[in-house]
Image (cartoon, rainbow, N blue to C red; front, side):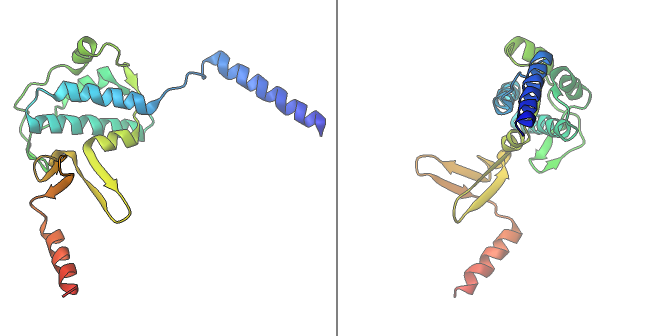
Length: 187
């Protein structure tokens, strides 16, 4: 039995040496990398009209999620090419995408990154949860669960940090109906 333990220890040492030798020891903080990338995307879209900025962000996130699905990294130059060739379409509102060409010519994403964010890696491994959080706001506690598109914030959903209140305007017909039924049960 002692011989087997010695052989396992030798194997682990050999494996660790091999992993170190071929460079698999580089640990990447995917969350921090994704946060940095999303900050770059925010900076890239900050001067665009609101709806185009939202559509561009959504396009980038969708691209990142697709890359994640097939276990491929987001390569900045490829993303820039995608944005040029298939630019995000302007939306009439955050839920409806028109088929028209974008009103604003998007600046080249790769050029923007090279000039404005020289520390941004040219290739990132997309962190699915961070990408989803970027376009959706969600939260829960013991009695409440809520999720909504980030584009609703400031429009149909307003947060007042002074009073810590969240106000929802333009409630959907389905939700109104369920609320009315629930309130009538108590009467």
